[in-house]
Length: 267
Image (cartoon, rainbow, N blue to C red; front, side, top):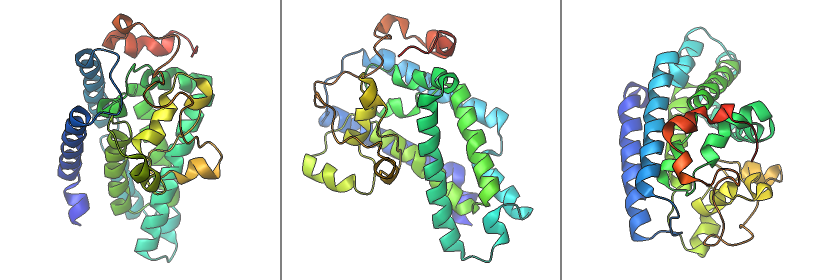
C-alpha cells in the first residue's frame, strides 16, 4: 500500500509544505499583531517539536501506524473481527480517533495532573504555526499511548491511521496559524474543519473561553457536547493569548517550559 509504505515521506512532505505555506501567509496576511519575540518563541517551539519527535521514536518506535499493522496481523480489535467494508471501517475509525483526541484534550484541561502537562501548550504568548507543536514531551507520549490503545481496541485499518496522523499534524499547524481568513469564508469552512479563528478562542487568557473549542480536525464534537464558542468576547485582535500567571517572556525559556509541570496547576 503506497500510503503506508511511504508514510514517513508523506508526513515530512505535508509537514514542510503546510509549515512553509502558513509561515508565509502569516507574514503576508497576519490575523493579529505579535506581542512577544518571534525569534525566542520559535526557538522554544521548534526545539520542543524536535524533542517530541525524538522521544516518540525512541519510546514508541512502531507508533500508531505500526500498532495498527500489528493489530491487523494478529486479528486484534473490533474491525479486524467483523465482516465490514474496509472503506466504512476506515471512515468510522477516523471519526473515533478524532473523537478520542477531542475527549483527551478536554480531559487534559479538567484533570489537574494532566493540566500540569498541557499548560505548556497554553503558555505561548502568541499563537502561530509553531504553537501547534508546542506540547510537553510527556503529554505527547501519553497521547500516543492513548491512540495506540484505541487503535488496538477498535482494530483501526493502518491506512486510516496513517491518513489520520498526517491530517492531525497538518490541521494542528493550520488551526494554530496566525493567518487572516475572511469571516464569510471562515464561517463556511468551520462547518467542516476547525479554523484558526475558531481554535484561537481556545487560547484566550479568559478561562471560560480557554475551556471551549477543543477540536483539532472536526468542529462537530464541540457543537455536539456544547463546548463550542463562536468568537472571543474581546475580538481576535484585542484578546489576550496565554495564561494569566505566565506573562513574563524572559521566564518562558526551554528549560523552564520543560520543568513547568512541577510548578503547580494555577492558570
